[in-house]
View 1: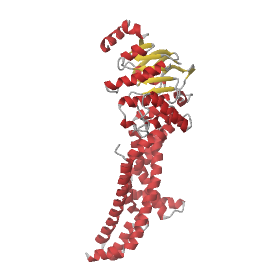
View 2: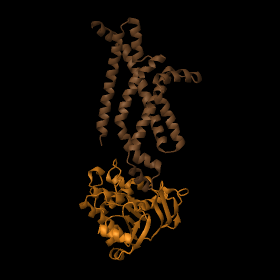
View 3: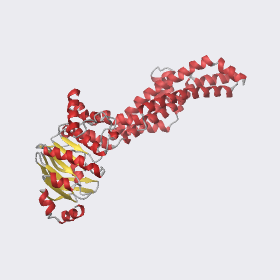
View 4: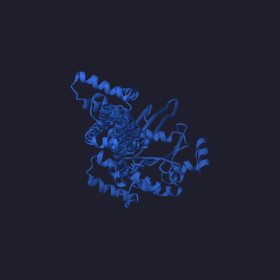
Length: 217
Length: 240
């Protein structure tokens, strides 16, 4: 047990740096994923057939294949064409992945707004795009906050998979330490503790946001 | 004001409107009645193109409206609509509901829209409710806000789709009062309702729909005291 705490303390500076990398990967990829998700949700709800097919293709492929495959595909595929750092390859892969789930969240929330809202907006002379922006989206986005929070937490933990393309974040640092010291159980437990702490932070922020927005209404 | 010629509407295989002809003159109040499923709400919704006709012509202010070539949002600016379930915007205050379309569709300056909005709320008896959210209002109050919201666009005709059907009985009167005062001000109105008292008192003309067709129409006095069509007789004997 003493060795566990010794290891925890001696690796603390390195893990803090790795944690910062995990947070950056997660933060940047989720911001991109929100943009991707919103755009795809909006093209889906236009009801235009070929746009719907694009949506179905995107969501179908992303949800139908493992994240690790997508990361590898992007890292070894895209870097053949353009020069991309491991960080950006990982971030983009995570963004495209979460984007599909977030698109489904947005689509569901937009479609859950009573259709009388769109009818009322249109009957007042609003074009569909204006009605979407002023009337439907504010209601839909508020409803999206609880499921988005859930997706953010999944995204944070999923970022561990970029360890396999050589980014030094929490999980890869644990792997390295475990390999060098042969103390696998200890270092993967340490990794778990860091994730637990970060998820607790995110959860705290989300609950504050939910309270402020009064999303139960 | 509004002219409908040989209007047909299908929902899949269901033939809902079977060649309806209807004309509404300026300042006229037309009340459409009929059993549920007779097509009266569908006819009303065709008038501002929330439902698309399958055949026939619809003329608004003398101009034929072809959904394929006419921007419908422009047409709808002149045709106000009040819904059975109010459809107020829950994320906006009462006053914001009222000024939303004038500010963002007609580009009325905000200060002017607010002033006009407060006047309209005053007119429907809700001058003190501008800053509350719709969820705090009773059904009757919500519907009066919905009327003010439609009026804020200064429409040339107002459509009412069963405006009191979702209300508790004791709240029906306050909404009908507002509608009566609108009629007295000379607003052109087409009203689908089950309120026979309102039809009798306020309508210039009663239109009775049966099975997707206008079975009978006329002034309310004659219609209610002496309906000719057997279906109209049957309907009135059940509701009066």
